[in-house]
Length: 314
Image (cartoon, rainbow, N blue to C red; front, side, top):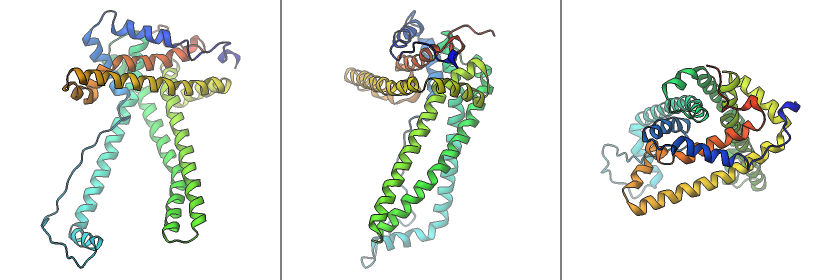
């Protein structure tokens, strides 16, 4: 245990080497093709973290139907939809199924991309095929772990959500209002707590378990076991890391916003480039590299067994 608890671990010290890593990888020398290759890995590593949507306006046949002024709007809507109810249900089921499949594909690609991005930063390499092949078992293991973890998380959220729904129904019926309010407060608190725990687990897995897996094992459970041993000896340090991550994220968000603002002021057309997922990642690649390198340099402080920057035997 003492081997995993060094005398000094700082959240400040990794900043300088992380910045230097950005300079070395992206600007010494500047190579646009390298930006696009590493940017692709970074893009894969962040798939699914943001989403955009489009609005669709559906018009049923006979959209010119005149509403009966003697009926309530709700009744009129029900009567208009009733002939197409099976079609609506089938369409909704297909949309849910497609969304589920897309979410699975994005999760799988992101699991592979996390290892590819670490590979590029650790070795100062611009490669896609090599890490895609070398870390296939790692990525697949991480994908399965996250799917199981998400399912468990949803089961944990089912109870507070059910309590929340029941409490809202009670209040809507004007029965036991005090109990309903207490139920809503309790359910919301549980949902927030569970969501925070889920977020922390995902954060620790992405930041620390992934590089540990790349160094020591292809199994996510084995990587988690090593990380839990490390965290059990360094609880306060990990808590401080999470707090400092909020500061880093805010700083990166401000910098990214300023870059977008300046670019838009120079040329309004550039806002389209930032909106494109892959191109936007390439443009902001120094920020992505810094954030990933920071976590790797922080982990390195716990000993050479956690140093991904040490050349590994192939």
